[in-house]
Image (cartoon, rainbow, N blue to C red; front, side, top):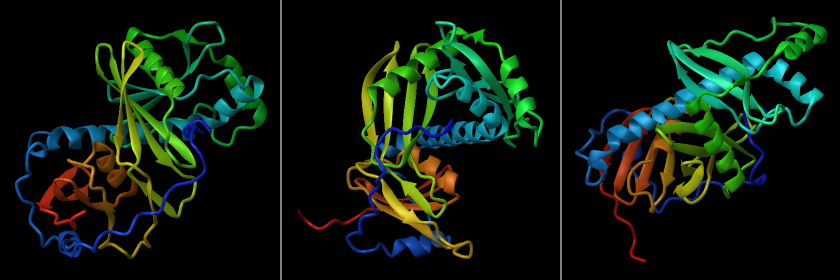
Amino acid sequence: MFLLLTMGCAHHASMPGPDGYDPRVAEWVKGNLAARPAPAPCDKITGALSSMGSLLYVYDQAAWHATDAVEPVLRTVVAADPKALAPGWLVVQRAGGVSVEWVTVRSGSPEVLVEEPVSLPDFKAAPLAPPGADAATVKAVADSLRGRPLSPEELAQYTALQAAVKHGVAIKAEHLNVVTVPVGADEVWVYFFPATTDPNVELFGGAVELVVKGGVVTEELHHGEQVHSQPKPPPEAVESAAYLDIPSMVCPSETLVFSSAQYNRRIFLRGANGAWGIAGPTLDYLGTVVRPAE
């Protein structure tokens, strides 16, 4: 409820069949296929793509662990006032980690109501209410919460998030997960990822990125045209990889770096500029792709 947005519809496409399964997958997964120099323009941005994808993963994991720590209190707040919390949440850099924040507008202006520190790299978050606390104790914690004004940086991120939610994105998925990343004094990138509550399914591709400047959505970027769904492999399938054929993807997306880390899953991508192996932050160019003539 507090980590997934219910935009979109309850459907996601299955992974399309590739035009001939690429035999390099098995060799790459086994470590027998060496990376080659990446072609232009990817050669100049793979480092940035890797860093951004890793940051998206850190922010998403922090939000997940923070939500687990504060969810009983958040549910009590919303039960008393369904409009108490604004959509989404903020992730803010702090010394030693990050802070995940939920914002209220009950006073007429946005205020941080719940602020949950998350240490890095272990993603530890202390419960807001004592573990196993009864309803009265949780309610007492909820009633004790007091809002505080947002800092200029928090306000910029909050404004961007609300603009992005209002703008909306057309992703066919059961739920949407959102990650906001400030990249400048007045610029925030808001990523929407397809999400599911099915623990036996993994989703790849189809993410949408909104560039927000000065509180206004100025650009909408699609990281693959559709959502690719795969069954979660069994634990013993250590030498496996998600296989994606996305002819429109010139360079591997930072959102695939995120998904690889999220599922702890290798991804073999057949893109417009060749084949890529994605293993967490590592992006290996594996050579050209020959596609049938249209």
